[in-house]
Image (tube, rainbow, N blue to C red; front, side):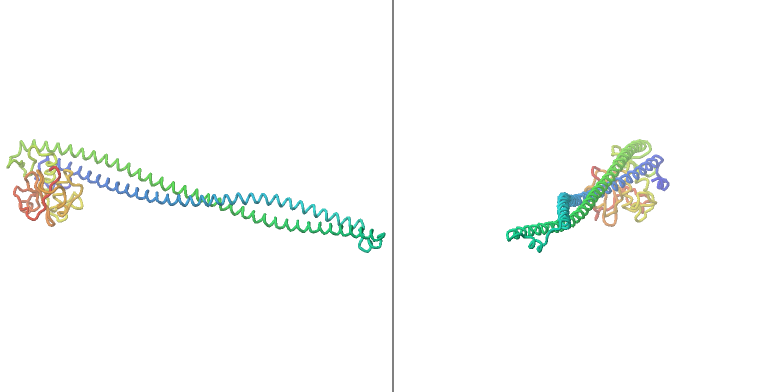
Length: 386
């Protein structure tokens, strides 16, 4: 607004000052509204990501439940293996003791047989005293042989059983080591997944909290700017009414100052004064196609850009509209104070009986005119309450 004021040299000093303050505040308000909208979008995006993460957490929890179930099964297997391992070790000790005993007995028999000169079959026959003695000696010899055979058999069986137990024990120990490694791996996987999920969720919640705090701050500043703008508008309206009463003539119930810039009539709402003040500030600026659409501050304005600029000064618009956009803006029909006429090619308005139109600029050098243009082919709208 400050860059536009020199071009509106026909305005009074009071209107220049008011227009600059109002335009600057409106620019700040528009920026604040844009920032608030951006933050709301970011919060919505954060919420969407949190919801996605929540879905991921649910899936991860299912995965964790599966891992935990597998972990429980492997731990149960490990307990059984360790129990079997203990039993196998005990059994191996018993078998080794039996083997030792059998080996000792076998060694003792061999020594006794060697040192005692145990008779062979021929000696038994020759030394026998009669048939009965022979039978008794033969039975004894057979019992000795059978006993030796049993000792040898027990020794062989014990040795084979020891070998089997040693092999089985090695398998169990290997299984024990494998299960232990798998369980540790599963526990580490579960712990890592839990930590990652908690970290991600905490970071997302923190980000949304920061965005929410920023939004509260922006809304607070925006509220302060809007209150300041309303206060300045009220002051401008009072000053304009006072100036109109002393320096203006009255034309058909509407005031116009000696510089040719319109003033709100007595009893008009403060917003009408704001719209007129903004309109005065750009009333004589050149027509530039598309002017006032990229930004409220421009070196010239087209038809819808002019209307947008004036309405935004009273907080009736947050961003510029083209003529088509005005066809659905506000409420249908004419308003008490402001009426906007729009179609696909052109937009203009009346404010407290004055026509604000770029056609009037081409005709008389100012966008303000007392004459009324044809409204045929235009959609008629007005701001709610005005």
